[in-house]
Length: 510
Image 1: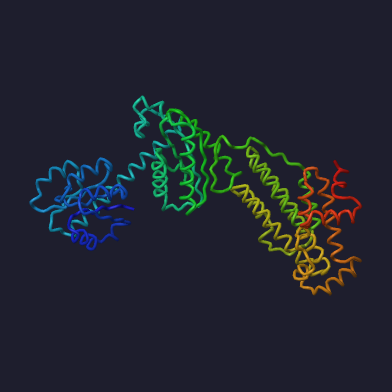
Image 2: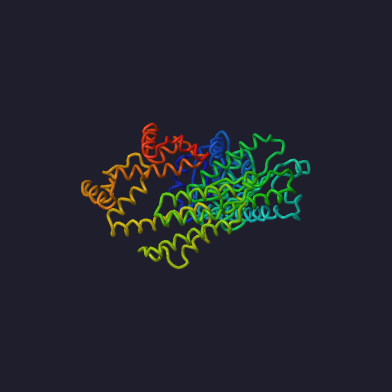
């Protein structure tokens, strides 16, 4: 987007230029107006023009004075002067300012269009050259044998007094699903965010989906202030990137002196290598990565298999959630080892579905596609979501098969899946199984020899007994986990069924 600032004390001239120029043929253009030089400087402070199109003679501040002032802040702004025949004395100033053109009034629209087109071409070429130079510098700064002294001149951290008096932090931003057309825009927006936060940076694309950014700032800024500014920068970058993509921001170590940038970069690379263990859109700090390594307990595979055989979907999903949480906190675990754990669980899930002859979409669970999905998964959370989705798929098929075989099996299945719900009732079960309450109670009693309510109570107490054996579980938590909202009522029912209070039963296993 090229920004053009049109300055003339005659509103009809400004509006005429805007109306007559074929802007659409010149590419994406943003236009602002000002009525004299002083007003133009005020507008430019926020607008940051790429091209200044200005009349020469204006009240308060003329076009030449404006141009000299504007160039102090925006040295690369291209200038086009508009002037009458009597203003030729300003031509020398135009040459000194290296103006793109000097268009005489009355304005020839074709001549002005050509001058604007020429200014845009120069601006785009200059932007491309500047970008290429900065890209080259940013990449060279991560090389240990780089010519740091000369490279530093390009980012204003030399003379020598600043060579070791500047702090640097290298950041890698992994952008996923990036639009190729937005590449330069993204870099410009990130640069703006950093500069507005009173730091500076040089950045480029190291790879198609990876931005390399070197933050730099005075080394005498205290630790707390640096962290506050960094957090603000990361929040602003995250807010911007979230609008169109997902990403990871990976921070390297803060170093002093330009020669130590490769050290900061190496820490940023380490942080990026751990992105697998983080949620999308996370900021990964090199010094906050867990050093723990996960080691698989073989009982986990066995327990998962038992859950499947018992048709216990709730605990199958709970096992995946707990496993993922534990591995997420062990970010030094090799990624291939982590994926292998889930391969084994997935194998058990597929085996269970085949052994039960479940009717499942073959494109969903057949051949190697599930294993290929795990192999290509970018994050641990992707794998977790995939595994839970497949568990739901398999158990939906189990439920459908069971309901077609025996309505009592459907009743039992619903009780087993929902016993922890405080509001579990005959009406709930009736609605789920599409059986009238009376008929449902009748066939259940006939087949099992007990009532549904009695079965629910005994099943809940059985589950409670298992949980009471866990020394870390509190009775109040167990009460809610087995579907009772009142602790006293739970104790009363438990004692009636077992002859012991929950506390007495728990003491037996301490």
